[in-house]
Amino acid sequence: MKRLYARLVAFWDSQPMFRKIYIYVFLFIAVFAILGEFGEYVAAEMLQSDGKVFSSVQEVLLWAFFTFIVAALETSVLISFLKNVIGQFTSVIRRLAAGELSARIAPDMADRKDELGLLARAFNTMAERRERERAREKELLAAVSHELRSPLTRLSVAVELLRREKVSPELLDRLGLEAERMDALIASILEYSRMESRESSFRLADVAALVRETAEDVRFEGSMRGCMVEASLPASLPLDADADMLRCAVENVLRNALRHTPDDGCVSVRLEKARNGCRIVVEDGGPGVPAEALEQIFRPFFRVDASRQRASGGTGMGLAIAESAVRAHHGRIWAENRREGGLRVTMELPERAMRKTA
Image (cartoon, rainbow, N blue to C red):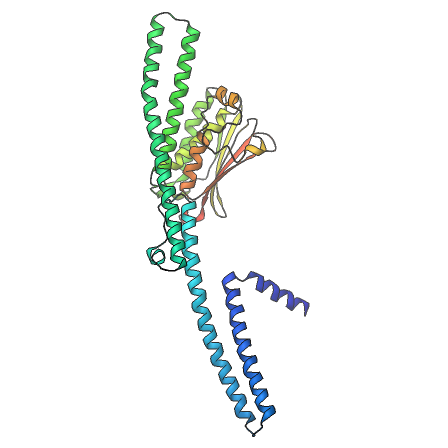
């Protein structure tokens, strides 16, 4: 008996909310109707008995049957309506969360004259305002980056002219270094702006080949410092992806790992199939990141240690660009410290984008 009760409880807990509501409403109406009819029948029998008990029982059963049918239909219509309303809002909210700022509640819902229509119109107004704000932010970012290009060019020319005037080499090197850093920062800002504003173009791509080519490029840079880049990749892994965006994400994560790995250290990258899709994991031999900063390192311009970032030549935009690219693939990216030291950055792409291979 206890086992049966436990199974019933487990079955009930596993049911979705709408099914529970359906059962509650159905039982309430049905029990209310049956008890009402039964009470009326008992009262009639107590007051007057004319030998038609069997016929009266048949009438009660027939009436109860039709009551169940009507209650089931009414409840089904109500639940379907609620599911449609909540489903529309849930779908739009998920699209907005995924970065599709043009998502809106459908006109058939927004044009209603009741409270649901008012809610839908208010929601669409909020989404439109957010989209306009985001567009202005991108325009401002692009404009500022573009305007900074001109003084940067003039600064570079001035440095070259000063070199001819036999100015202190240390001062010239300092000016040249600052010009290079400004150029790298502007390039990162422009790349991030393009990543946020461009439309994704998903096509069949071999992610294994893409990661392999990117690892080779970074390996060449690491060889100048004696750093190794180890890659553990399958022969091929086809995926519906935007190859340029995905390559940019892998490249930025690898370069970030190489930047914070000491000389003669090692950076590793591996690509593997996972239960929910495919996973790209990059590990470095650096000092790691404080636990409280693990979620913030994907924000634009965030720096764990400003002095350390300057020394490494970073702009604080690499991981933000990677996060934007992974988000465009409806995937996720996160970082964690390794027990043996260093940082592990994982990029996970969803299974729905995976192409089945023979």
